Image (cartoon, rainbow, N blue to C red; front, side, top):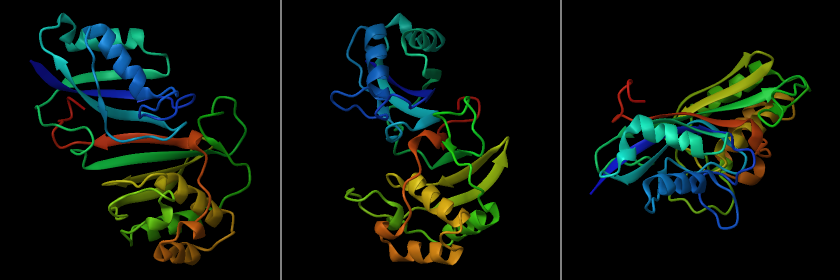
Length: 254
């Protein structure tokens, strides 16, 4: 007999080939599954809320796993403690939450929020955790472009090329640039994201901020649906999966 649990965690993506298990590459999912299997003395396979790419970080990430009820380690506080003892320093377990048997970390999420950080001055403490951009950026123009995003729901132009998806439609609920402690932060929330979407949007909006393209040109890129017309993908080091919203988790659990 097993019980399904949501595992809330955070991680630095530096040195990992993303969340999803890949042969011959270190991944977050592999580290978690190995730790769970060792503690519970049986083979455990987790399912993540999505896939983060190589080098992308997560302040908040959820996975679910079916764990055996008859193990003493299923005291959730003890399981959290043991996981944190076993896992590398760059991966932290925040909480282990019992959920119903049909709960799904990927399909039950109703929104996800990403933050992208651009450091405006050289800082050893943000190296590898933000994109260093010392050239001045027009944040007003970038926010105008962010507002244009809200007018559309098809973002094929920001989807990674040669990726098979059923559709390229996303409902963007908010998108804004803010300045926080010598860093520009792009904050975006949507019901779903396409692969590489936030990095492609960020890179294209930086082109707006540098004056290479206008906000109206940004609009034309969206309407084209052509990835070749959008800007380059911003470096992975500045991207953070910031939050995931589930209706099945109340505030005390999440």
